[in-house]
Length: 331
Image 1 (tube, one colour):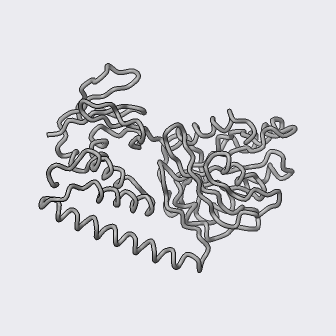
Image 2: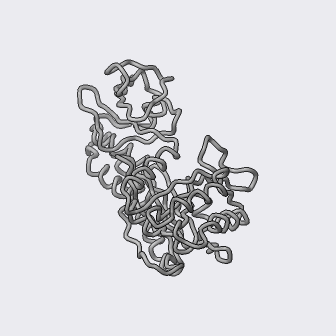
Image 3: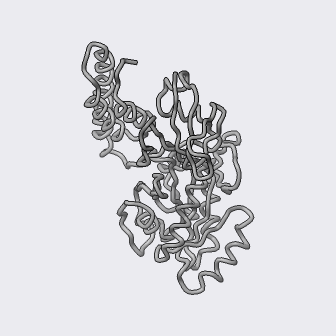
């Protein structure tokens, strides 16, 4: 690693390594090139970054040229996790996406209005999570082009409409169709393997939408009798902000992740962009996330948190907790 790389460059490099979308990686590479000091010791690194940037831009251009010839069902994962919305026609998935994220889907009162996948970014506090709307699924229709997206998602929200006459049948339509496609929807409780043989196990929460409509709570009890043994069922309404906030929290918790903030020695912690780690990760995993060299050079760390002595010294075995502030010391 060249000498005298500024802290801002190292932070940008860590963000680049964590970035998942091509656009974000290109933007961060350009920023790294601007921050990189130019001297003999950085010539090789500068050339490497330029080559990587050129390659990424060429790949993006190629994808853009071919995208117009086929439906766009590929969504690059972004944020702390990718969650797909699936459900029967007119269940309210698009309206839910608009309420949870910055996306602006077309919201209609007629079925099958969503013909493409549409991603949006949801924020639970300071944690970005990608939510993706998908074409509707019924007992006799499933768009096979969306199968790869569903199989690769981290979680699913199975949206049902409490105001619909078919509300009791809607979960079964989706579950049965996906089961035939080797995707088994399972509850979000506990840790599960990703696959059983060739069967993808997709952790799923049933979102009982339009909970503010007449008789919705009575209908919800019938739905629970039928499906609560298989899934958690959460009533929501886009017109009830408390239910939407509770849904955001439930999605965040289902991903089994923690947010960790970096602090440089003698400076305030950077609380603008948390590092996302799986539950059970250690401070050594965090060190590698900040910079790949830091894992091998790790000496110790100091930790700040709500229930901790400020600046408590910890070793490499320390298991990070949500909202920890960590100051790394390397050799």
